[in-house]
Amino acid sequence: MALLFLSCLLILPVLMGMGHAMQHYSGCRFSQGIAAKIIMGMAGISLVWTVTAFFLPLNTYTEIPVIAAGVFFFFKEKLYKELYCLSKKDNILLLIITFIILFSSSFYPFILDHFGYYVPTVRWLHTYGLAQGISNLDLILGQMSVWHIFQAGFSGIADPFLRINSVLLITYTVYIIEKKSWVQLCLVPFFLFFTQSPSPDLPVLVISLIILNEILNGNRNTAVLFGLSVWVFAIKPTMIWLPILSFLYAIFIIKSSFRKMAFGIFILILFFFKNLWTFGYPVFPVALGDFGISWKPDPEVLRLSSQYAVQKTYDMQYSYDAIRQFSVVESISHWLFLTGIKSAIHISFVVILTIFIVYTVIKKNRVLTCICIALVTKCILVLIFSAQYRFFIDVFFVVFFILCRSHVSRKSAISICLGLSMASIGCLTFPLALQALVPSFRPGRFMGNFERQQLYRPSVYQYNRFRSFKVGNLSFHVSEKYPFNFDTPLPAISESYIFEYARAGVFPQLKDKRDIRQGFRYKKLTPEEQHQVKEVMHTIEKSYQ
Image 1 (spheres, rainbow, N blue to C red):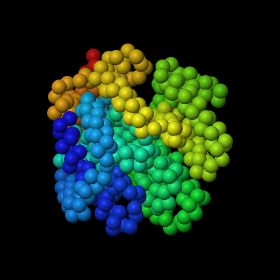
Image 2: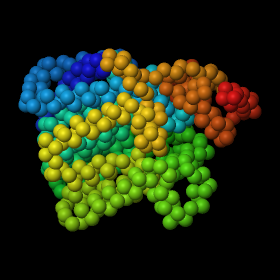
Image 3: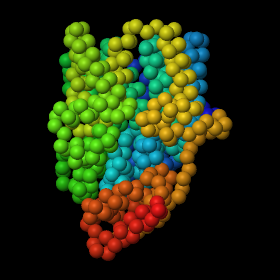
Image 4: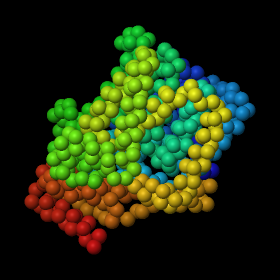
């Protein structure tokens, strides 16, 4: 916890300084205040590092210049004086919530994607940058979220524990206090569960609420609003509703010209190019928009991944063949009435969305209508491709914010925030109680217990057990008796993909066996390589016996 505090003391001034520089030299000002500068700094640095990652790894050599530049602007422009703008009461509140956030961040990570997706992605970016066709090695790595690019850039010196989300949540708290948007304070306790990992869910939730608040308050800087909305979409494409909303708001409410969309269009082009480089298609993981790129994944591997996504929609409670036999009515009913907590989430989602649609019709407000159109469009797309609850969880927060924004006082918000924060910390500190209370909440099974060392440094898991293999020209590593490769030496392949590649009759190979940064291609297996893959599979299976 103490080390996280020092990390924040370094990163926040850097972001504030870079954000100020970006606003000053571009002439684009998002909003007034400390939080607005920090958010602009996050967006600007992440985009610069996205371009950089095509050519260089995001290690200390790329981190140091950004830190130096941010600190320079922070002191040159005397931005530290803005810290005195908050009242004494607000400063005390900020310190209390910051303490809560840092304490929550110090617990063991427990989101499974942390081990199978977040950490491997950050390690690849830190070590090699954006490797062409990386999805051929491990499909999930093809996403390379802009948020993980941002995290990777700070993972050498400023944030080696990968707790950048705690910095973001502190920034969000600053924004709430600056804008007196007290209802959003009630949401902070729920976001504490995202601070142990560099989960892209937190930035898209937090920044979408900030942009939504700016739109509802009549912010007319549509160029930056649309640009930041596309940036959120680049972090996680399931947030498609936000750029749709910003576009509708700019064109139909503010009557902006299309020229003000330039910043957002640039980010969108960069996002598409990044995905084409790593995945072979414009939007991960959808195999739409085939440009005939030679390093795109094998079609059979994509088909298997698509089947798995369909099963995830039903919480893996039905086989793919069984799901295919569902009628439309059965598809809906089985999705609504799954066993466990997912059923409650799905039913609540339908109820909440229906309430918001009715509310919008009654209010007859143009901005609310734009929000409703954007949310419904997003929900339809999610339901078509993969209706997993984590892809529409943002709808709950958005609707709560809109319905309650004028009905929660500062005093009530603080009481709710502190009360729920204590409950959240209780769940993190005593995970067995959470598992007993909600046994179908699977991530709860992976929560680690509180340890005193957390007061000094955050808890991290170490496994570091792996086996090494070679197929064709690719030497790789596989975690031993564990499905993820969060601390396995690179290049690493998840054991599940070994079996999928064998089933598809392909295997990843280096484009240039002397330079891993040149990227990966899939290759049809020769008889000799098929034998090598069978040996790998046999070794994996034997380790579990």
